[in-house]
Length: 173
Image (tube, rainbow, N blue to C red):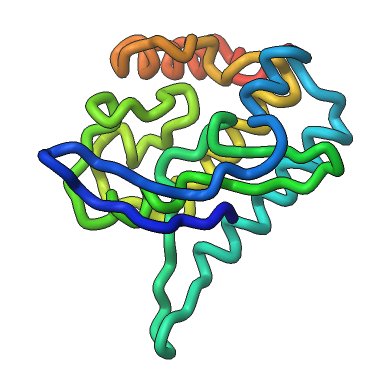
């Protein structure tokens, strides 16, 4: 997990100051490669899964203090030349934990957003796992799930999900 040094609100704008991990973002790798070989995708996303497990099971002062990423996408995952993976953006998650959020207003990556995020409902580990599955789909197939582009609005995204489910084409290649 990439380190967060500070976060807050200044003049109504959220800010996070954090470590920029070495390597390229998974988004940049996918932009170059399209889809990754299955073994590479699994190796990268398994490390992301371990980072999420660590964050979801955090304990502070003997109390369970889970931290949910809330907006996991390829832009927040960094892969070094040696294959070491770091997940950034947890500072945003910590800051957003106490604020009422709207997925579109916050610029969440809709193709990776969980139903809870889109509905403005409470977030749990399941939300991050949904996003992890969407990132895995993008990494293996070279496209986001449900056939919806990154620039889609929430209505287009939900319509794409419903269409894919109805046509049985959720994860066809």
